[in-house]
Amino acid sequence: MKRLSVARRQWLLGAVAGLIAVAAGYATWRMLGPTTPALSERVVRQFVDAAAREVRRYRRSLDEIRSAVERDATAVAAARAAIEAQTSAAIEAVEAHAARARQRIQAIEPLSWRTRRNRLDRIGRGLRATKEVLATEAEAVRVVLPATP
Image (cartoon, rainbow, N blue to C red; front, side, top):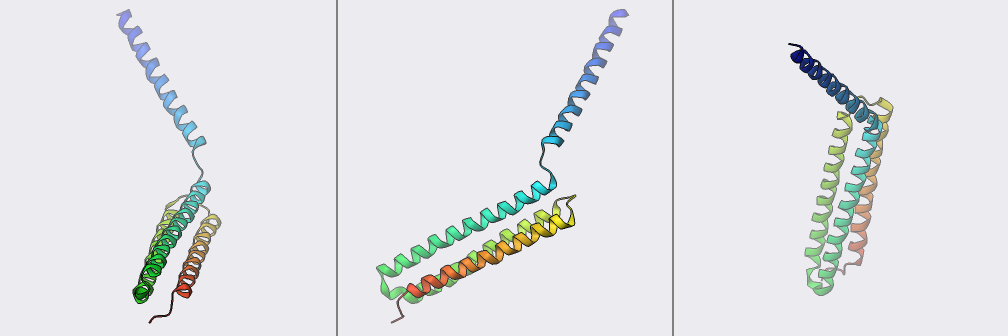
């Protein structure tokens, strides 16, 4: 009988020690985990990185179009159409990244309204700046293309 009560005490002590370890782990995780402003900042930075990737991809495609025209000067009309297609595709991709970032910001709770507005404004400014860069790059390539024969 006495042996059974010792086993119960050890089991009870083990269960309590396990609960304490779980509580300590959770508290540590909460303290070391990112805060909601840090999470929202991460979302904005991920959007900026995605927009930069799209701009790099767009520039590579414009370089390919430019080199194709240099090899075959009769393909100017096709190159102009390809530039327009690439520009609209890049803008759509960046807008999709911005929409996903806005949704992720809206899903972060609790986030103060000032921080939320700031992050959404930064996403909007980044989207406008990216569109301007894409338009500038497209115009620079259009200027370099020879006149259509």
